[in-house]
Image (tube, rainbow, N blue to C red; front, side, top):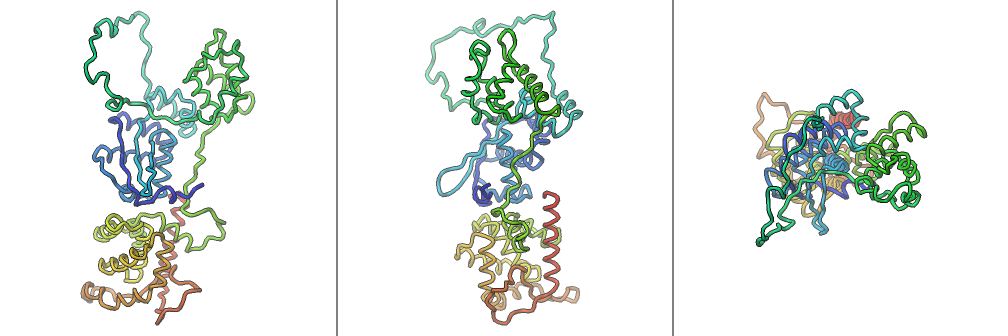
Length: 456
């Protein structure tokens, strides 16, 4: 699978398109029907795009979404493709070198259409179980039967209105109209209807019964049960009645019976084929080093999360967050590069972020066109002597607060673990390494491993 960073970066801009207004009822459908299937993170992304789309039509960067959702860019990408697959989002990417996106939100299916859909209903059933499924279906059930002692007396359009000469501008142009269409997904493109019809004689299954909606339903059943067109011929022949009628209910019943006879009495389940994206190409897990794991973390985490993790889970100061945001949004630095910069400076300056010092290194990296965490780590190693000189010139001491008796003595300068490599060229006056650095780095890696184990 293509690594996510080839498809999406935090700096990529996007606009949101809401073709029609959404309602609180849509929110109920999203929460009760869709959230069990695609998860809370995907729904949170949808609701965030919804709120932002109603507030503004201006461009934003994905870094803004990372901050609002508190998620890495890889998780946002995973949530996005979940929404696309389930039919709640359409994504458009421009073809120019400056990559940008348009996100068009699609409304959830109405309950009747949702529960008639064999894939969605089965997917929901497999996620929440029979008891909850019946409960949620009952919640959205609408009584459609009219008592037999009532007859319809509604007037038709032609009973009340008469045609008049069309005026200029009538009919309205297509682009002036907005039709609320239900969101949906497609399973028809891979199904060979030509092969299906070759094995169905006109006498047994007239072509007229294979309407567009029936074909769509056949394709969904074929996908759900993993049947090819030849297998679906049997299902269609079982489903069509004596009056040559073919309905979705008949198809569903025939498919269920055929599956029970040939495969199992247990209904099939739908599971996501897509796994959480990795920011690096797949490698042998046993060969991954601690630096590889840290590299993955720095490439995918939001800067605010890096600040939080280095501070042992404590919320960072607004000034630190603002500094990180400025580097990403105003100076257009990649978030991975900003993460390395924050990591490097904090461990060098006794956990202090001094704006002048950070911006001086950032300016150097921008001129060098540093765009990846790996490149940022390397330049930090190569230019370490120069960065030490900048520090010793007083850029930190002139800003630091005077030492008081209540303050702890400053610790020795520390360097990130990734800084030290066996093949490094020795720098002048190699500084003593503080053993507490290794302890803190092990804690950070342990946190990352714990998050990974929890699927976070």
